[in-house]
Image (cartoon, rainbow, N blue to C red; front, side, top):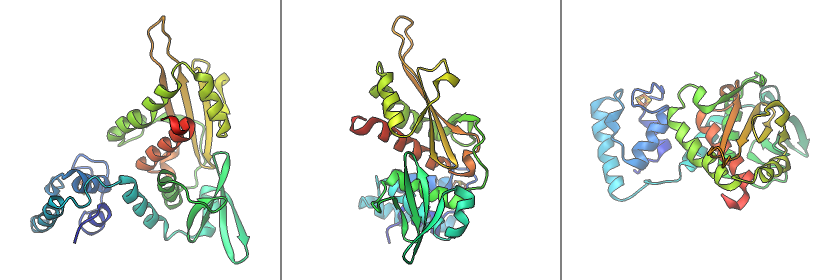
Length: 275
Ligand code: SF4
């Protein structure tokens, strides 16, 4: 058999997220083993005979090029769907907000999402018109459904680096979100402001006067994001900077992987096809 990331996570790893391997979660470790050929024995909590047996199978599948360089979003999505599968729809409004509705025999939850809504029902999560969401959106929405606690956003902001166990993700945020936004909007803060407001973001510059653009996004009822942008200042040799901040209660509602997927989706929506 060929192990996928989810197979390895589900069938072999201890699922304790102890971080003794240097990675934040067992799922992240599984991704490194399958896609990057990290040796299984790097996890010190597996019996040697199991390591030997599974590593033999992994070596064989790697030699055939199976599963390596697989789209990590696909595995993350399968995992997120599995986590959400046991959640009862009727418990969701209290945990993540939204309104339960009925259409014929179908009951679904309608949840505000950026400037539109998404529809959560037994068969999955879609846009309001029933069309599919992209991978990034599906991963963080399913994880939000699975995790969503009841604590409301509290209006205090944290950068990713202030949230525990995010060291390995800070670079992903910089390379996949902040840097492309800088490239796209350097010297054009007004374009960022109009892209953000078109997406339902509120202009909150008066609260953050040092930033050239300050946008508050109520991405979902319980998931709030603040985006601050400082444009380059040629005379003073300051390059442009972007900061994506999350509400202090974010870890009740999204795991760290999902925060990155959400930020990447925000970047895609702001940039359009340009980055
Ligand atoms: S050391 Fe093993 S159990 Fe701990 S997080 Fe890594 S893979 Fe999971």
